[in-house]
Length: 434
Image (cartoon, rainbow, N blue to C red; front, side, top):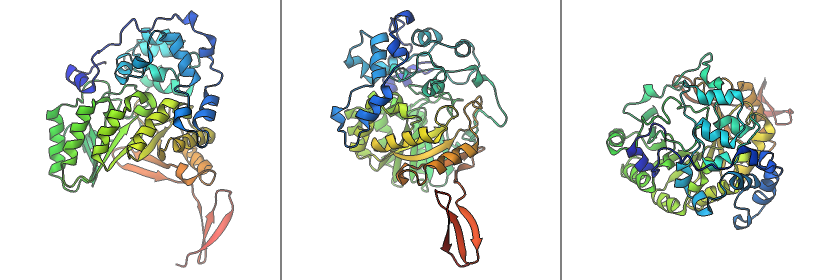
Protein backbone atom coordinates (compact mmCIF):
# COMPACT_ATOMS: atom_id res chain seq x y z
CA UNK A 1 0.00 0.00 0.00
CA UNK A 2 1.40 3.38 -0.95
CA UNK A 3 3.30 5.17 1.74
CA UNK A 4 2.26 3.02 4.68
CA UNK A 5 5.11 1.58 6.70
CA UNK A 6 5.73 -2.00 7.69
CA UNK A 7 4.41 -1.48 11.22
CA UNK A 8 1.08 -0.24 9.95
CA UNK A 9 0.90 -3.11 7.46
CA UNK A 10 1.32 -5.52 10.35
CA UNK A 11 -1.49 -3.88 12.30
CA UNK A 12 -3.75 -3.95 9.25
CA UNK A 13 -2.96 -7.56 8.45
CA UNK A 14 -1.94 -6.64 4.89
CA UNK A 15 1.43 -8.22 4.17
CA UNK A 16 2.07 -7.06 0.60
CA UNK A 17 2.67 -3.41 -0.20
CA UNK A 18 1.95 -3.85 -3.92
CA UNK A 19 -0.79 -6.03 -5.41
CA UNK A 20 0.65 -8.92 -7.42
CA UNK A 21 1.21 -7.75 -10.98
CA UNK A 22 -0.07 -11.05 -12.37
CA UNK A 23 -3.50 -10.92 -10.72
CA UNK A 24 -5.44 -9.46 -13.65
CA UNK A 25 -4.92 -11.71 -16.66
CA UNK A 26 -7.77 -11.22 -19.11
CA UNK A 27 -7.18 -8.81 -22.00
CA UNK A 28 -9.89 -6.17 -22.56
CA UNK A 29 -10.69 -7.66 -25.97
CA UNK A 30 -11.87 -10.83 -24.27
CA UNK A 31 -14.19 -9.12 -21.82
CA UNK A 32 -17.75 -10.34 -22.42
CA UNK A 33 -20.16 -7.65 -23.54
CA UNK A 34 -22.55 -8.54 -20.72
CA UNK A 35 -19.97 -7.26 -18.26
CA UNK A 36 -19.45 -4.05 -20.21
CA UNK A 37 -23.16 -3.41 -20.24
CA UNK A 38 -24.80 -5.45 -17.47
CA UNK A 39 -28.47 -5.84 -18.17
CA UNK A 40 -30.01 -6.70 -14.84
CA UNK A 41 -27.93 -5.97 -11.73
CA UNK A 42 -30.37 -3.45 -10.28
CA UNK A 43 -33.36 -5.68 -11.11
CA UNK A 44 -31.75 -8.57 -9.28
CA UNK A 45 -30.95 -6.37 -6.31
CA UNK A 46 -34.48 -4.98 -6.12
CA UNK A 47 -36.27 -8.31 -6.53
CA UNK A 48 -34.08 -10.67 -4.54
CA UNK A 49 -32.39 -8.55 -1.88
CA UNK A 50 -34.96 -5.94 -1.01
CA UNK A 51 -38.23 -7.84 -1.45
CA UNK A 52 -40.31 -7.52 1.75
CA UNK A 53 -39.47 -10.32 4.14
CA UNK A 54 -36.85 -11.89 1.87
CA UNK A 55 -34.57 -14.01 4.08
CA UNK A 56 -30.87 -13.35 3.66
CA UNK A 57 -30.03 -17.00 3.15
CA UNK A 58 -32.06 -17.15 -0.06
CA UNK A 59 -30.53 -14.13 -1.74
CA UNK A 60 -27.79 -14.49 -4.35
CA UNK A 61 -24.27 -14.22 -2.94
CA UNK A 62 -23.36 -11.54 -5.49
CA UNK A 63 -25.02 -9.40 -8.13
CA UNK A 64 -24.94 -10.39 -11.77
CA UNK A 65 -22.41 -7.63 -12.38
CA UNK A 66 -19.95 -8.90 -9.74
CA UNK A 67 -20.21 -12.47 -11.01
CA UNK A 68 -19.53 -11.31 -14.58
CA UNK A 69 -16.56 -9.24 -13.42
CA UNK A 70 -15.02 -12.17 -11.58
CA UNK A 71 -15.48 -14.46 -14.55
CA UNK A 72 -13.84 -11.90 -16.83
CA UNK A 73 -10.88 -10.79 -14.73
CA UNK A 74 -10.37 -13.23 -11.85
CA UNK A 75 -11.45 -16.61 -13.26
CA UNK A 76 -8.81 -18.53 -11.31
CA UNK A 77 -9.52 -16.97 -7.92
CA UNK A 78 -11.58 -19.32 -5.73
CA UNK A 79 -14.38 -18.12 -3.48
CA UNK A 80 -12.18 -18.69 -0.45
CA UNK A 81 -9.72 -16.03 -1.61
CA UNK A 82 -12.24 -13.62 -3.14
CA UNK A 83 -14.18 -13.56 0.13
CA UNK A 84 -11.04 -13.06 2.23
CA UNK A 85 -10.68 -9.39 3.15
CA UNK A 86 -6.90 -9.74 3.39
CA UNK A 87 -6.80 -10.96 -0.22
CA UNK A 88 -9.03 -8.09 -1.33
CA UNK A 89 -6.78 -5.54 0.42
CA UNK A 90 -3.57 -7.01 -0.98
CA UNK A 91 -4.98 -7.03 -4.51
CA UNK A 92 -6.26 -3.46 -4.64
CA UNK A 93 -6.03 -1.81 -8.05
CA UNK A 94 -3.84 1.24 -7.57
CA UNK A 95 -2.19 2.43 -10.74
CA UNK A 96 -2.69 3.08 -14.44
CA UNK A 97 -1.39 -0.29 -15.57
CA UNK A 98 -3.79 -2.19 -13.34
CA UNK A 99 -6.84 0.00 -13.89
CA UNK A 100 -6.57 0.04 -17.67
CA UNK A 101 -6.87 -3.74 -17.70
CA UNK A 102 -10.36 -3.60 -16.23
CA UNK A 103 -11.60 -0.20 -17.45
CA UNK A 104 -11.78 1.64 -20.73
CA UNK A 105 -10.14 4.81 -19.43
CA UNK A 106 -10.89 8.25 -20.80
CA UNK A 107 -8.00 10.55 -21.70
CA UNK A 108 -8.88 12.66 -18.64
CA UNK A 109 -8.72 9.65 -16.31
CA UNK A 110 -5.53 8.39 -17.93
CA UNK A 111 -3.89 11.78 -17.53
CA UNK A 112 -4.90 11.99 -13.86
CA UNK A 113 -3.43 8.56 -13.18
CA UNK A 114 -0.24 9.45 -15.03
CA UNK A 115 0.41 12.87 -13.50
CA UNK A 116 1.47 13.75 -9.98
CA UNK A 117 -0.08 16.52 -7.95
CA UNK A 118 -3.26 15.02 -6.53
CA UNK A 119 -3.28 14.75 -2.74
CA UNK A 120 -5.00 11.38 -2.71
CA UNK A 121 -3.63 8.12 -4.17
CA UNK A 122 -5.87 5.80 -6.18
CA UNK A 123 -6.97 2.50 -4.66
CA UNK A 124 -10.00 0.28 -5.31
CA UNK A 125 -10.68 -3.22 -4.03
CA UNK A 126 -11.47 -5.87 -6.66
CA UNK A 127 -14.90 -6.30 -5.08
CA UNK A 128 -15.79 -2.61 -5.39
CA UNK A 129 -14.32 -2.44 -8.88
CA UNK A 130 -16.84 -5.13 -9.85
CA UNK A 131 -19.59 -2.56 -9.21
CA UNK A 132 -17.91 0.07 -11.41
CA UNK A 133 -18.89 0.43 -15.08
CA UNK A 134 -16.13 -0.64 -17.43
CA UNK A 135 -16.83 1.88 -20.21
CA UNK A 136 -19.12 4.59 -18.77
CA UNK A 137 -16.97 7.25 -17.11
CA UNK A 138 -20.10 9.08 -15.91
CA UNK A 139 -21.35 6.11 -13.86
CA UNK A 140 -21.79 7.34 -10.27
CA UNK A 141 -19.56 4.79 -8.53
CA UNK A 142 -16.82 5.21 -11.13
CA UNK A 143 -16.74 8.96 -10.60
CA UNK A 144 -16.16 8.49 -6.87
CA UNK A 145 -13.07 6.22 -7.08
CA UNK A 146 -11.32 6.91 -10.41
CA UNK A 147 -9.35 10.20 -10.40
CA UNK A 148 -9.75 12.92 -13.00
CA UNK A 149 -7.69 16.04 -13.69
CA UNK A 150 -10.39 18.16 -12.04
CA UNK A 151 -8.81 17.14 -8.71
CA UNK A 152 -5.79 19.28 -9.59
CA UNK A 153 -7.86 22.48 -9.82
CA UNK A 154 -8.31 24.43 -6.60
CA UNK A 155 -11.60 26.33 -6.56
CA UNK A 156 -12.74 29.36 -4.62
CA UNK A 157 -12.95 28.71 -0.87
CA UNK A 158 -11.29 25.28 -1.09
CA UNK A 159 -8.57 24.19 1.32
CA UNK A 160 -6.54 21.10 2.18
CA UNK A 161 -8.01 21.15 5.72
CA UNK A 162 -11.34 22.92 5.18
CA UNK A 163 -12.79 21.89 8.56
CA UNK A 164 -9.82 23.14 10.55
CA UNK A 165 -9.18 19.77 12.16
CA UNK A 166 -5.47 20.41 12.58
CA UNK A 167 -6.23 23.52 14.64
CA UNK A 168 -8.43 21.51 17.04
CA UNK A 169 -5.85 18.75 17.55
CA UNK A 170 -4.32 18.85 21.05
CA UNK A 171 -2.24 15.72 20.39
CA UNK A 172 -1.41 13.99 17.09
CA UNK A 173 -4.40 12.19 15.61
CA UNK A 174 -7.00 13.52 18.06
CA UNK A 175 -9.52 16.26 17.24
CA UNK A 176 -11.38 17.89 20.15
CA UNK A 177 -13.97 20.29 18.73
CA UNK A 178 -17.17 19.60 20.66
CA UNK A 179 -17.05 19.80 24.48
CA UNK A 180 -18.01 16.21 25.32
CA UNK A 181 -16.64 14.22 22.37
CA UNK A 182 -13.48 13.70 20.39
CA UNK A 183 -12.47 12.29 17.04
CA UNK A 184 -9.67 9.71 17.25
CA UNK A 185 -7.83 9.04 13.97
CA UNK A 186 -6.28 5.61 14.34
CA UNK A 187 -4.94 5.08 10.81
CA UNK A 188 -4.70 6.88 7.48
CA UNK A 189 -5.29 3.73 5.43
CA UNK A 190 -8.47 2.93 3.50
CA UNK A 191 -8.97 -0.06 1.25
CA UNK A 192 -10.57 2.24 -1.37
CA UNK A 193 -10.05 5.99 -1.58
CA UNK A 194 -13.03 8.27 -2.25
CA UNK A 195 -12.03 11.10 -4.55
CA UNK A 196 -13.93 13.70 -2.47
CA UNK A 197 -12.34 12.67 0.85
CA UNK A 198 -12.26 15.38 3.50
CA UNK A 199 -8.92 14.07 4.75
CA UNK A 200 -7.22 13.85 1.36
CA UNK A 201 -4.32 15.78 2.89
CA UNK A 202 -3.42 12.87 5.14
CA UNK A 203 -4.97 9.54 4.12
CA UNK A 204 -2.91 7.10 2.10
CA UNK A 205 0.44 8.68 2.96
CA UNK A 206 1.51 6.68 6.00
CA UNK A 207 1.53 9.67 8.34
CA UNK A 208 -1.05 8.38 10.84
CA UNK A 209 -0.05 4.94 12.03
CA UNK A 210 -1.78 2.89 14.74
CA UNK A 211 1.35 2.52 16.86
CA UNK A 212 1.03 2.36 20.62
CA UNK A 213 3.22 5.37 21.41
CA UNK A 214 1.08 7.77 19.37
CA UNK A 215 -2.22 6.30 20.50
CA UNK A 216 -1.15 6.37 24.14
CA UNK A 217 -0.82 10.17 23.88
CA UNK A 218 -4.44 10.31 22.74
CA UNK A 219 -5.60 7.95 25.50
CA UNK A 220 -3.79 10.02 28.11
CA UNK A 221 -5.42 13.23 26.86
CA UNK A 222 -8.84 11.59 27.11
CA UNK A 223 -8.06 10.25 30.62
CA UNK A 224 -7.19 13.71 31.93
CA UNK A 225 -10.21 15.39 30.25
CA UNK A 226 -13.26 14.15 32.19
CA UNK A 227 -15.76 16.10 30.08
CA UNK A 228 -15.15 13.64 27.20
CA UNK A 229 -17.88 11.01 27.23
CA UNK A 230 -18.03 10.07 23.53
CA UNK A 231 -15.16 8.91 21.27
CA UNK A 232 -15.56 8.56 17.50
CA UNK A 233 -12.87 6.28 16.06
CA UNK A 234 -12.09 7.13 12.45
CA UNK A 235 -9.20 7.64 10.06
CA UNK A 236 -8.68 6.33 7.33
CA UNK A 237 -10.81 3.33 8.09
CA UNK A 238 -10.51 1.78 11.56
CA UNK A 239 -11.76 -1.57 10.26
CA UNK A 240 -8.61 -1.79 8.14
CA UNK A 241 -6.87 -2.69 11.40
CA UNK A 242 -6.61 -6.26 12.55
CA UNK A 243 -9.15 -7.56 15.05
CA UNK A 244 -6.44 -7.66 17.71
CA UNK A 245 -5.30 -4.07 17.20
CA UNK A 246 -8.87 -2.75 17.14
CA UNK A 247 -9.75 -4.77 20.23
CA UNK A 248 -6.79 -3.22 22.04
CA UNK A 249 -7.87 0.31 21.10
CA UNK A 250 -11.47 -0.29 22.19
CA UNK A 251 -10.31 -1.88 25.45
CA UNK A 252 -8.09 1.08 26.28
CA UNK A 253 -10.98 3.47 25.74
CA UNK A 254 -13.44 1.26 27.66
CA UNK A 255 -11.03 1.41 30.59
CA UNK A 256 -11.50 5.18 30.93
CA UNK A 257 -14.33 5.66 33.46
CA UNK A 258 -15.89 8.80 31.97
CA UNK A 259 -16.01 7.45 28.39
CA UNK A 260 -19.61 6.29 28.01
CA UNK A 261 -20.00 5.82 24.28
CA UNK A 262 -17.78 4.53 21.48
CA UNK A 263 -18.41 5.00 17.78
CA UNK A 264 -16.64 3.67 14.70
CA UNK A 265 -16.80 5.38 11.31
CA UNK A 266 -16.23 3.03 8.36
CA UNK A 267 -16.95 2.46 4.68
CA UNK A 268 -16.02 -1.22 4.78
CA UNK A 269 -19.59 -2.58 4.42
CA UNK A 270 -19.77 -0.72 1.08
CA UNK A 271 -16.26 -1.15 -0.37
CA UNK A 272 -14.99 -4.31 1.38
CA UNK A 273 -17.92 -6.10 3.05
CA UNK A 274 -15.79 -9.22 3.38
CA UNK A 275 -14.10 -7.44 6.29
CA UNK A 276 -17.23 -7.90 8.43
CA UNK A 277 -16.43 -11.40 9.63
CA UNK A 278 -18.14 -13.34 12.42
CA UNK A 279 -14.87 -13.07 14.37
CA UNK A 280 -14.87 -9.28 14.09
CA UNK A 281 -18.48 -9.08 15.26
CA UNK A 282 -17.81 -11.31 18.27
CA UNK A 283 -14.96 -9.02 19.27
CA UNK A 284 -17.04 -5.85 18.84
CA UNK A 285 -19.83 -7.23 21.02
CA UNK A 286 -17.51 -6.98 24.03
CA UNK A 287 -17.39 -3.19 23.86
CA UNK A 288 -21.02 -2.06 24.06
CA UNK A 289 -22.44 0.54 23.98
CA UNK A 290 -20.82 0.70 20.55
CA UNK A 291 -22.30 2.51 17.56
CA UNK A 292 -21.21 2.47 13.94
CA UNK A 293 -21.49 5.14 11.23
CA UNK A 294 -21.41 3.59 7.76
CA UNK A 295 -20.59 5.51 4.61
CA UNK A 296 -22.99 4.67 1.77
CA UNK A 297 -23.38 6.88 -1.30
CA UNK A 298 -25.55 5.21 -3.90
CA UNK A 299 -28.08 2.37 -4.12
CA UNK A 300 -25.69 0.39 -6.33
CA UNK A 301 -23.53 -0.12 -3.22
CA UNK A 302 -26.35 -2.01 -1.53
CA UNK A 303 -25.45 -5.51 -2.69
CA UNK A 304 -25.97 -8.97 -1.20
CA UNK A 305 -22.46 -8.73 0.27
CA UNK A 306 -23.20 -5.38 1.89
CA UNK A 307 -26.50 -6.66 3.24
CA UNK A 308 -24.76 -9.61 4.84
CA UNK A 309 -22.15 -7.31 6.40
CA UNK A 310 -24.80 -5.00 7.86
CA UNK A 311 -26.86 -7.96 9.08
CA UNK A 312 -23.89 -9.35 10.97
CA UNK A 313 -23.21 -5.99 12.62
CA UNK A 314 -26.86 -5.43 13.50
CA UNK A 315 -27.18 -8.96 14.89
CA UNK A 316 -24.16 -8.17 17.08
CA UNK A 317 -26.27 -5.45 18.70
CA UNK A 318 -24.52 -2.51 17.04
CA UNK A 319 -26.83 0.39 16.06
CA UNK A 320 -25.99 1.38 12.48
CA UNK A 321 -26.34 4.84 10.99
CA UNK A 322 -25.44 6.01 7.50
CA UNK A 323 -23.47 9.08 6.51
CA UNK A 324 -23.98 10.06 2.88
CA UNK A 325 -22.17 12.85 1.06
CA UNK A 326 -24.22 14.77 -1.51
CA UNK A 327 -22.28 14.63 -4.79
CA UNK A 328 -23.06 16.13 -8.18
CA UNK A 329 -23.74 13.49 -10.80
CA UNK A 330 -23.71 10.73 -8.20
CA UNK A 331 -26.75 11.03 -5.92
CA UNK A 332 -28.04 14.59 -6.40
CA UNK A 333 -31.64 13.79 -7.26
CA UNK A 334 -34.61 12.84 -5.12
CA UNK A 335 -35.28 9.46 -6.71
CA UNK A 336 -31.71 8.19 -6.32
CA UNK A 337 -31.53 9.38 -2.74
CA UNK A 338 -34.91 7.85 -1.92
CA UNK A 339 -33.84 4.47 -3.32
CA UNK A 340 -30.65 4.64 -1.28
CA UNK A 341 -32.47 5.48 1.93
CA UNK A 342 -35.03 2.71 1.38
CA UNK A 343 -32.32 0.13 0.76
CA UNK A 344 -30.38 1.24 3.83
CA UNK A 345 -33.46 0.77 5.99
CA UNK A 346 -33.91 -2.73 4.54
CA UNK A 347 -30.31 -3.42 5.58
CA UNK A 348 -31.15 -2.19 9.12
CA UNK A 349 -29.12 1.00 8.67
CA UNK A 350 -30.75 4.23 9.85
CA UNK A 351 -30.08 7.19 7.53
CA UNK A 352 -28.36 9.71 9.80
CA UNK A 353 -26.49 12.47 7.96
CA UNK A 354 -26.62 13.86 4.45
CA UNK A 355 -23.47 15.97 4.18
CA UNK A 356 -22.97 18.90 1.89
CA UNK A 357 -19.65 18.11 0.19
CA UNK A 358 -16.79 19.76 2.07
CA UNK A 359 -14.73 22.34 0.11
CA UNK A 360 -11.64 20.15 0.02
CA UNK A 361 -9.04 21.14 -2.57
CA UNK A 362 -10.01 19.85 -6.02
CA UNK A 363 -13.64 19.04 -5.15
CA UNK A 364 -15.54 21.70 -7.12
CA UNK A 365 -16.74 19.14 -9.68
CA UNK A 366 -18.44 17.18 -6.89
CA UNK A 367 -20.16 19.99 -5.00
CA UNK A 368 -23.81 20.87 -5.57
CA UNK A 369 -25.60 24.09 -4.61
CA UNK A 370 -27.02 23.96 -1.08
CA UNK A 371 -30.43 24.45 -2.68
CA UNK A 372 -30.09 20.98 -4.22
CA UNK A 373 -29.71 19.39 -0.77
CA UNK A 374 -32.76 21.27 0.50
CA UNK A 375 -34.71 20.11 -2.55
CA UNK A 376 -33.81 16.50 -1.80
CA UNK A 377 -34.83 16.77 1.86
CA UNK A 378 -38.12 18.33 0.81
CA UNK A 379 -38.60 15.50 -1.69
CA UNK A 380 -38.11 12.95 1.11
CA UNK A 381 -39.98 14.58 4.01
CA UNK A 382 -43.57 13.39 3.93
CA UNK A 383 -42.95 11.26 0.84
CA UNK A 384 -41.27 8.38 2.65
CA UNK A 385 -40.82 7.01 6.16
CA UNK A 386 -39.52 9.51 8.68
CA UNK A 387 -36.77 7.02 9.52
CA UNK A 388 -35.60 7.40 5.92
CA UNK A 389 -34.99 11.16 6.09
CA UNK A 390 -31.43 12.04 7.13
CA UNK A 391 -30.28 15.28 8.73
CA UNK A 392 -28.88 17.56 6.04
CA UNK A 393 -25.82 19.33 7.43
CA UNK A 394 -22.92 21.53 6.45
CA UNK A 395 -19.72 20.91 8.38
CA UNK A 396 -18.82 24.56 8.68
CA UNK A 397 -15.42 25.50 7.22
CA UNK A 398 -12.83 26.62 9.73
CA UNK A 399 -13.99 24.33 12.53
CA UNK A 400 -17.53 25.58 13.08
CA UNK A 401 -18.96 22.08 13.39
CA UNK A 402 -22.09 20.58 11.85
CA UNK A 403 -24.91 23.00 11.11
CA UNK A 404 -28.30 21.45 10.22
CA UNK A 405 -30.28 22.79 7.28
CA UNK A 406 -34.00 22.35 6.64
CA UNK A 407 -36.46 23.63 4.06
CA UNK A 408 -38.52 26.52 5.40
CA UNK A 409 -41.74 24.97 6.66
CA UNK A 410 -42.65 27.98 8.84
CA UNK A 411 -44.53 30.40 6.59
CA UNK A 412 -45.02 33.11 9.22
CA UNK A 413 -47.50 34.23 11.85
CA UNK A 414 -51.07 35.52 11.89
CA UNK A 415 -51.85 36.87 15.35
CA UNK A 416 -51.64 33.99 17.80
CA UNK A 417 -51.37 31.41 15.02
CA UNK A 418 -48.20 29.98 13.53
CA UNK A 419 -48.54 29.35 9.79
CA UNK A 420 -46.97 26.08 8.66
CA UNK A 421 -46.47 24.53 5.21
CA UNK A 422 -46.76 20.74 4.88
CA UNK A 423 -45.13 18.38 2.38
CA UNK A 424 -47.95 18.98 -0.14
CA UNK A 425 -47.48 22.73 0.00
CA UNK A 426 -50.70 23.36 1.94
CA UNK A 427 -50.74 25.93 4.75
CA UNK A 428 -52.01 25.10 8.25
CA UNK A 429 -52.51 27.08 11.44
CA UNK A 430 -51.15 26.04 14.80
CA UNK A 431 -52.24 27.95 17.93
CA UNK A 432 -49.10 29.52 19.40
CA UNK A 433 -49.91 32.60 21.50
CA UNK A 434 -47.02 34.94 22.15
